[in-house]
Length: 371
Length: 91
Image 1 (cartoon, chains in turn brown, green):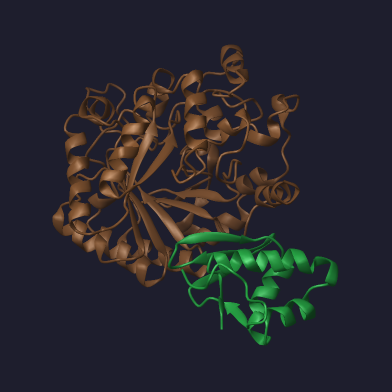
Image 2 (image 1 turned 45 degrees about the vertical axis):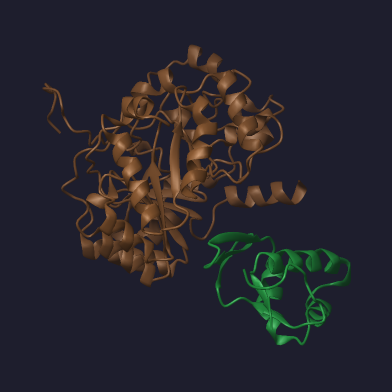
């Protein structure tokens, strides 16, 4: 463990380039999922142009960032989606992209299947239409399943079924495993965070403490299930889960949003965590020199968690989950497995911050619709 | 995956042509373009050993020349792991 914890300390001090870079291509989305962490819906008029996007890929390649996680919004809604994808592949930058599957018809599936450098993650937040569509909108289950059928038929190989774990679907994990096996797919589970529109549904949909304990055991038995290091707060229950088990925000992880703003991680699209913009001096300059990232890489204090014997296991948990529930960053994770988060939530002094920016489509008559 | 999951020390080895190395403060990040797996090289000495492996007629020679005796067993194990992950190939 000595070498591992020394390595973790080095990671916390920051790297020459991120290990895990997420790039949201557009805020446009044809769904309006209740828990959308980027509060997507409408494209932003200021999104990167095709030539800016291609130049960004060149810089990513030059920085030896070996792959990029592409998301949105719905990335396939960009008309130049395949141009961006193919440029990345030419530059040997692997692309893992997340999609709701609505634009993944047979032709697109065949095109994706031609490239070795492309991974596809299709989101499915319930094993049946009732569970999924309650979160992701009516008809979205059938469309995601059709996309999976198309990928399978095109011989894509092992795509990923991506699941945000909620109170409603956590009991379906065995069935998810069977579905993944049916497609020859991999299963990827991530944590529900109170980011974006998720802030409104987080409290009602987050797994209960008992469910989180079951989830931990389920994951421990299945190291092949992908989690993107999502559940490191659960490592405080005992043996650590697969992964680095630290908050990588601004240290090993970051996000580039559709307008080129750089945030510390995909779950903190908020001005407090905006490090800069790629249009000014390029992404590399933001990564290396932004004040925010310097601050995040400086040795921090464990704060309220310093007295807890599990601090070394969970490192205080997820920064985004704390921020968007109104907790201080040195307080426990709101879903602390020892219940310290619940106590902090009861005692919190500040109101949770509102998501900003918000690109949700305005479906109701909005009286304060000026921006 | 290239290479057998053992390290024949008497052979010459080299960094796989399918692997990119990125220097980092802790050592380096290795990315295998076929398996798409990331591997951490957890010290600078290991990075220079891996980069210079192909200059030597055998892994034994490389370890003898580049790594101090008390550390050799540890680096031999590290090379074994890198061979298993396909980061280094037998020449």
